[in-house]
Length: 174
Ligand code: ZN
Image (cartoon, rainbow, N blue to C red):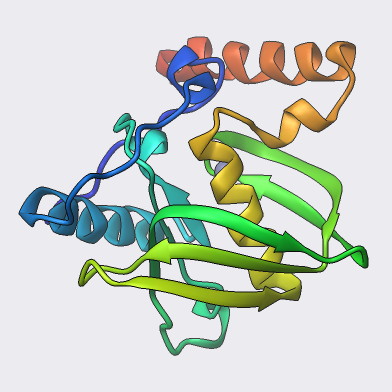
């Protein structure tokens, strides 16, 4: 297992559509372990494979980390089957977009079909924070980011700011 580097905007890979997994083998299981390790290390509550540069439809979530007890969940080839009309709003951040929080409205409840780590097809319903988190991560698999909810102008400002921080990251004052 290893902690992977998380890719940040404006890297073009984040805009790519990930490919479905055909079989859950050792590579996929190792990828899932790495995703969990990387997510916990970064104190995130969700991470998609594309965020570590792997274009497979795999994502991990654990919304319980704040309370101390872990509740790791992984999703392979997740598909949204149903969305509620009722909406909820969260201020969302993203490990690929440092120091940026955007208020986003999404369906409060979602029903997801996915393959679990044992290769079994599952259908589950999620509500509230978990629902938002699953939808955010599935967006990653389709190359969509939270900044895509903003106007082009606002999006450009955020990308410019992050690109500048990246460029200056080797600058030191002694
Ligand atoms: Zn994200």
